Length: 193
Image (cartoon, rainbow, N blue to C red; front, side, top):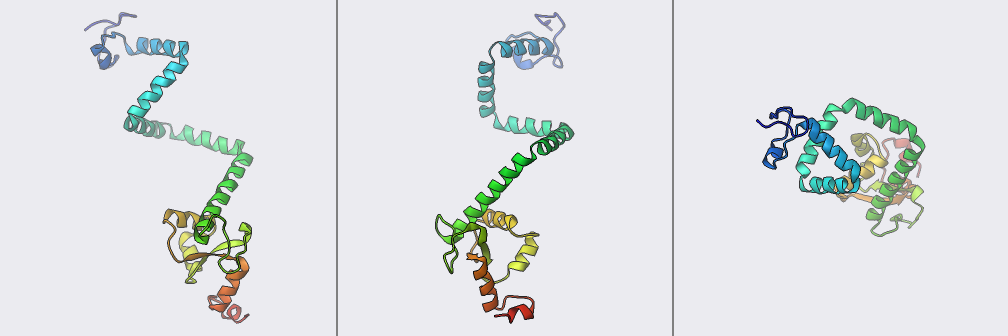
């Protein structure tokens, strides 16, 4: 067995890389890591380019290594994520609100049949007062099944490729439709119209 060319320790499979033997790079892991770090420090752009090229050529290995890393460092990852959420609460709130608004606009536009969401009955355009209506009138049961409405409903509609049976209505139009079709579970409310 050949010795390391830098520190002269005997090379074994446990302290060296067998691929390096084939390329005649006789270094133990410690010395090899030192040389690699020195090369990275001298030319960080070239090191980043090499790593990017390797990651693109080996996506399976990247996924495997990422999964192993996340499993081994789960506690510290969760602590960092929690700390980030606490330190960036206002910023994250803005991002969350923008995401919700974009999702609602996308779902409403799809069910309106055009780029601008509007009520199917009265063509009202203010997104804040538009809602998704179950055409068959089974909205309460569906919301209970999803354990909530609003964003959960929009996510469900998008994830299920916008199924049929839904329409966009202005809140007043939706209430009028409920009264006209006697969709209330409470008979007193149904007789208000």
